[in-house]
Length: 474
Image (cartoon, rainbow, N blue to C red; front, side, top):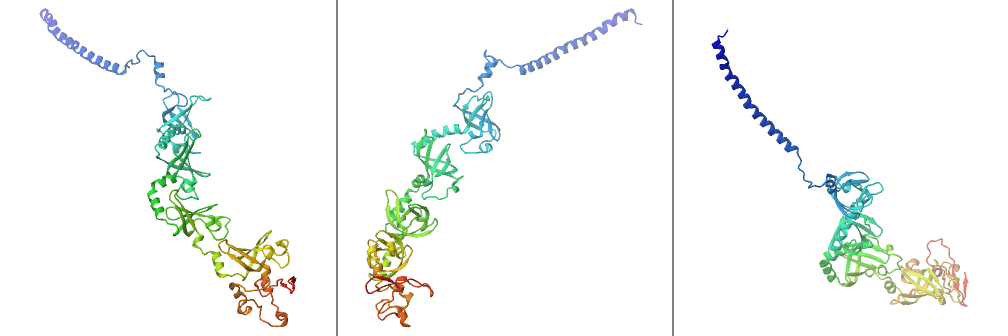
């Protein structure tokens, strides 16, 4: 036990220790509290949103973020969804806009995935802010169309070139995507006429704008004008060096109703149907086909209009001149009746050569109508009574042929030299008996009337002229 003195001292001794501990604890508590308060302040600062509405209500502030537009306006947006039949576009409106697949492109039946991709920023024209289903309906092709018109009008004013891919072959030409549908006529696709347009699909072509009508939504293009402009120097040099009368080789590039176009190596010239052949031609395709290599003569070069006139028949032997060189008046020739007319009959006596037998020269007796004497397709001998090379006319006679005469040289080989005398007159086959020869001095005209025999067994009707000049059946 402590004495009274110790007891009195002990409290005094321990008090400072307790006091010191309390002081230490008391001193530490304010420090930790300060740290906690600082952390709370930082959290508060992170959570507190500054009031920057400036007195504006929250709903008004939300409405202020929505884009304002009207029907017909062009807006921008981000592609957020692509379906098989439509595309959703976020334009900052309260709902996404819908672009139907038919409103995506000027091309027909396109796959939306081929036109746009997710996150693309595109322009669209507002067709209606709210349709019957409450949807915002947009059109990409209409926005493209509106933008394109402005651009194309500027290009037209500056006489500049527009370019775009060929997207379709239509009747009479091609359709180009130039932001809208531009029509390129077939005749203006190239410097030379193009028969098959399908190989141009997918190709990007540069063209000049030759017609523009916004009210009719009509844009007409010409690639030929662009090519002519870029190749004008070469064309001018080519035309300057091309002289009438020259013989040139070329390739038939196109066949049309009125003739054929021939590529001379950079430029096309026209062979009119009348210059294709010495014969009568119903259609140029009877004479030439696309791709044929031909030799032509230059008839005319029009530098102003940049046109070249050509002739195919000028490089060929003139059958009329050839006939005139190999035949003479009063000679007998063999022919085929081609046509009957009221005043006579036309007889083909050579390749592309027809002569007229006037009705007065059809028989010794009077003839009312040509069909009384001949029929179309009939073959017979006729005599040449006139050759007019300048007018390309030959006059023939059936009745004078029946009287005999000199046969044209090309037929003599068919009968043999023994059938003609020294002057080329037909005297008939070799004499075997009296029946074959007939009466003395009488000329057998059976071959002259019936023509060259095609076989030994051919039987033909023959006609002879009796002493009185009347025709009789033998």
